[in-house]
Length: 226
Image: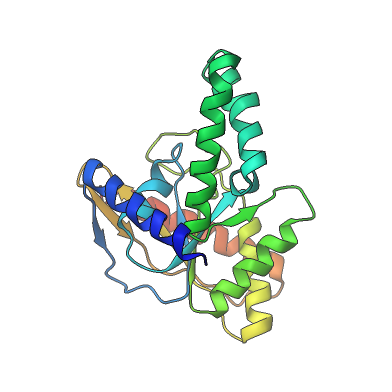
């Protein structure tokens, strides 16, 4: 990883921590490394606070458009600033240009793994993820179907990330731990849940469905903590 981008990310994280609320991390189960951490997106709140306060090596899954400067510019100019926020194009263009450079640099600095949903490039996402996991570095994934959902409770999730188990087991002979995270706003605590591993069901499909249900149950348990 380029030292410049890494240094820029660490400096930016330090600056952010000076202005955002401090969150204490509660990890009673001492989650294993590597692991796949799962957090409720909440319109960026979950990933931002996790990156700010979780002091452990992980790579965050990020939509591919934010890992390419040109694609990031198009996303901001053609949708985010103009259509979503209603900013006039003459102002949106330079704003998108500057933001695209900043976001691209931060993604490089934190070692983000690009995700291309519904595209054949998802193979590259899994390849990079498995490489990180085999190097004992964890992943951070926000699997919400509705990423704009700001409710404390996790809604429906994409389940494709659970396929990592199949490939990780094949390459290492070990099961992969999936660890839900709940960010308790009232108590300002990041609750790290119990690791969820695949069970002994007969087919991978059954194992995947069972793991999904247990992950949702663990999220529900954590949400009751505050």
